[in-house]
Length: 258
Length: 261
Image 1 (cartoon, each protein chain N blue to C red):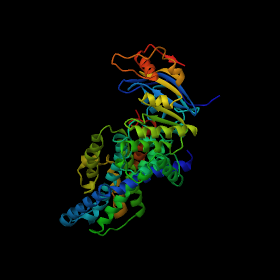
Image 2 (cartoon, chains in turn green, purple; image 1 turned 60 degrees about the vertical axis):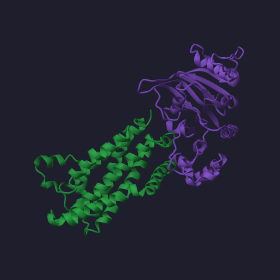
Image 3 (tube, each protein chain N blue to C red; image 1 turned 180 degrees about the vertical axis):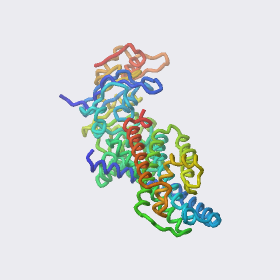
Image 4 (cartoon, chains in turn green, cyan; image 1 turned 120 degrees about the horizontal axis):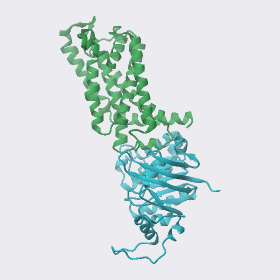
C-alpha cells in the first residue's frame, strides 16, 4: 500500500470506531462524567472540608488529577480491548481488516488512536466537571498534555493486547476489575504516597499509574512525589514494550488467526 | 501461457487442537475461470480459503495468487482478492452502505471513489433500497448479497465465495448465479465452494473435489464428469443423483480413488 492508501485505511478504522462511540455515547462518555461528579461531590464537598489540605492544596484540588487520570486509563483501555474483542469474537468482522492489504502497524495505530481519542475526550469532560466543584490552576500545560496523551497511549496499547489475546469475555472483564482498578487506587489517586509506610511506599513505585498521576499532578499543582524525568523514562519504556507486544501479536496472528 | 489466479502446492494445515484439515492439497485455478471446490463438511474447503485470504496460518506448503507468494508478500497478494466467508461476519449495527465503503477504506480506496462504487454494487445486487438500513434489519439473503458487495468493492481479480448461497431461496440464488456469471465475463476469477452440486455443474468450468484434506479430483467439468463411467445407479438409500453427484459420491466415499486430470 502507498502511504496515502495506508492513511485512508488508518482513517477508516478510526472513523468507524468514532461513529460507534457517538452512537452509544451513554455507554462511552456518560458513565465517567456521572462517576467523577459523585467523586467530586463526596471527596470534595462532603469529606474534603474535614480532611483539610494535602501537600499545601485543598483535598479536592489534590484528587482532580487522579480522577482525570482514572477516566483516561479506564476509557482508553476498555475501548481498545472491547472493540478488538467484540470484532473478533462475536461477529468476526475483524476479518474485514485481516483479509485486506492493511499492514499490522496500521491496524495497531487505528485501534490505539481511536481508544486514545475516547480516553482524552473523557478526561477533558471530567476536567470540565471538576471546574464546577473547584478552581483549578495550571502549573505546566505541557506536562498536563504530555501525561494525558502518554496515559491514553499506554492503556490503549495494553487494552489492545488484552483484546487480541482474550479468549472469552471473562478475559476482558477480569483485567479492569482485578488489575486496573487496584493499580489506579494504589497509585495515589486519593492520597500522597509520602503518607504510606515504607513497604507500601516502595510497592507503589512498581505501579505505572503512580508515575502518570504524579506527572499530571505536577502539571496542575507543581507538586510530585517523583521526578518528571524518571516518570517519563519509565512510561516511554512501558509504551515501547506494549507496542512491540502488539506488533508481534498482530503480525503473527496470535489470538486473531487460526 | 495462461496465468494462474491461484496456485496451491502441497498445502498442509494442522490446527492447534491436533485436527489436520489439509494434507498436501495442490491445485491451480487459471485466471478468468469459474472454479468450484467441492467436498463434504470438514474436508478442508474453508481452511484452504482461510489460508489464501490470510485468516488461517498454514503449517507448510506454498500458495501464489497471480504469481505473488501469499506467504512472503501477504499484503501485496491480498490487494487483488475479495472474499465472501461462509458465516455471516457483518457488523450488525452498521449501515449497509457503511459496511461496503469501510471495506473499500481498508484497501486504501478514498470515500469519494468508494461511495459511488458501493451504491452501484448495492443496486446491482438488489439492495438499492436498503443502503441506509442497519445490517441486522436485513434478511439472511440480503445479508449474503451485502457480503458479496463488500467483497467486490475493491474490484478484486480473484473472488473467493465460501458457500455463498447457503440458506438462500431459489429465486435469490438464481439472481446470484446470474450476477456471478457477469463478473466472470468481466474477467474476474471466481473460486466457489458449495454443497449444491447442480450449482457447480451450472456455473463452473473447472472443478476440484477435496476429501479429508486432499484433492481427489481436479480438472474441467467434462473431465470430472467423464470419471462417471457406468449407468447412474440407485443407491441403497433409494436416491439417484446427477452425473456430478455420482462422481462426487464415488470419490468422497472411496479414499483409494484419486484422479488428477
